[in-house]
Amino acid sequence: MISTARVPADKPVRIAFSLDNAPDDTPPEDSDPLAFPELEQQLQPLPPCHDSMESMQVFKQHCQIAEEYREVKKEIALLEERKKELIAKLDQAEKEKLDAAQLVREFEALTEENRTLKLAQSQCVEQLEKLRIQYQKRQGSS
Image (cartoon, helix red, strand yellow):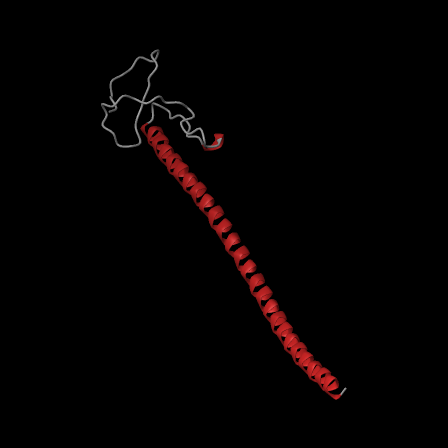
């Protein structure tokens, strides 16, 4: 609550307020000039002129904007972290997809090789059978 009582010029005046609409009987917070240490210096709320209601109001609005800015920066950081996680998952999925494609190609190549070897084996078995028959004919004719 702001009083209209006159304060002697030689006495310092301290004005405090809260951004969360708390009742006026709460103890004043320490009005550190760097109330938002994570903000760059040029974005810090400037201390208000205590003689001006308008200056106090601008300071309060600036503090609210700084708080919103801090929240947005925090949300951006969380979203960037989530983005990194999703990119890592996507990279892993793409790697697995490439691995699966490579395995499919290897399987197809091995299947073709197996078919070729089975064909060669059946030709060898057939040739061996022909040689046996020829051998038996020679044995029988001698």
